[in-house]
Length: 382
Image 1 (cartoon, one colour):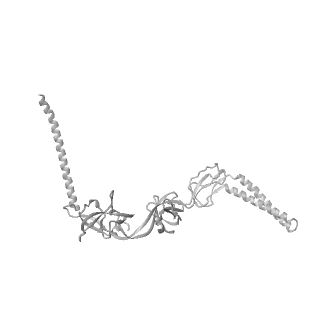
Image 2 (cartoon, helix red, strand yellow):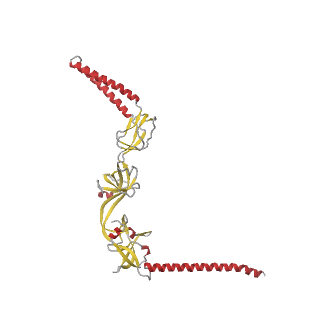
Image 3 (tube, rainbow, N blue to C red):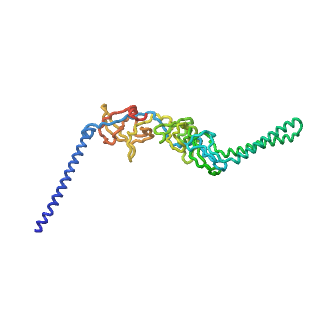
């Protein structure tokens, strides 16, 4: 009795296990069939084994003059920039500017209380007027031999001292004024009306944004190829895709002992105010072209952990069918969408520009060869 009950209890579990196994086998067979069908379809369409040669896109390696652009990181600096401060201590009696305002040279920005100096000026002006009158009277008397020459000279000295005193007080009054030393744009103000400030306290910054300097470094080996007056091209996040043009004005006459770089300074006309001091920009210096360079689209080179490679089509027949061979290459400069090949290829080689990873060694390839001109029309740099 117990044996019969045990058999019945195991029977449903056994049937469930058999069902699961059958389902897994069915899934495996269906997946394998789909994979085989997909592989055969790709082989027939793309030139895999049994389906004919694979269609590929390639270009012919040519020796040509290649542009050489020296790239660097540049710092934007102001030609004229200053933090304005008071020459003497005093109480702020007037603030005559708004933050961010554009001002002309000589514009009065801040006035410190000068009531005492103005009173001193009034007294000194009166003394100077009296001294001039005394001198004029003495000159009349001297012409009549009514006074001595010594007395006339004394009147001259009194007049000169009085005039000098007026000028001295006027200079003290000017020290109570803060004026713009050049045309420019003001920053944030750091004082308040009625505030007592000391000599040297920061009041406001003034920057001339119309003309800016761009400083950047180049390796000493490139020094002979850059000249004063040469144009450079700038790009920044602010200007977007637009390229700005500056002119090299100064080349530092010494090499940095630590970096072996030379600092150059270019001048930029910034009338539209797109750049501001403190920004960083990408600098491009156009150098003489490199003759007979092997130039390829960057897509022709495959980069991996083992290095750079390219797929060359060997034994190309009249109907543009050949065999693919992966060869190591040494990439030199990069410019735009192109690279210069230093080693591994020669003029006339037919190199794949697309689909290299789908090519097996020795596979038959049917090539559509594109000239360098065609590549340029497709968006590559010339």
